[in-house]
Figure 1: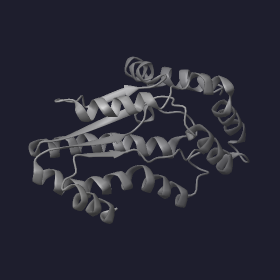
Figure 2: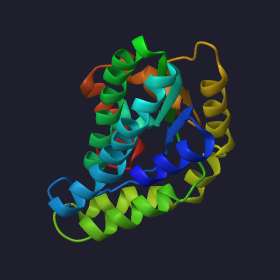
Figure 3: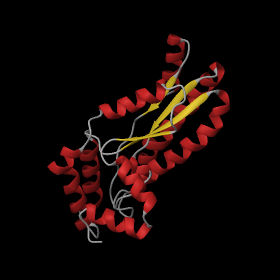
Figure 4: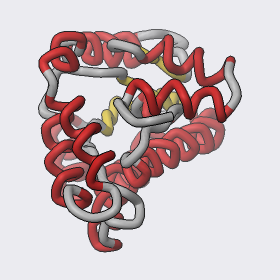
Length: 216
């Protein structure tokens, strides 16, 4: 990471934008997922992005400008069963982004969060594979089968938004004179975030359980 940042600065003379997009979904019951895998999930989804931010910030501060874009997820605002470790990383990245936004503002640096909904990428298949590796047998097998089947279903795939909607949101964020702090985009992002704000925890539990094919 350090070598990459140094190479960019040496070649371009500055660094104006950092987009932290790396991430994957390590699904499985919290009880089932090994601690090694849980740590790997946080390394990829949280510590990697924040380390890159640490490395880019001195250059951005020196030039008194820059934009850091952290790709979180609608999963940083809501939750689904068997996604605890994944949601933990996205909730964490949301909070870290908020703190960093306040810290970096006096130096002319913007910190923006992009919150994708359902996007047509390999994410669902990888999450389903992780889920089955962790919880296909044992106490959570029925839940795992229901959620993995939903992730792989044709109906689920059809409603996903194209990746271009996220690219467009990033483009807006890094070219705006005063970017929004958050851009929620892609299938289901805005309605789900709005629903989470409006209903109680118990009511949201019921909605999510039914949508996941689980008994509520």
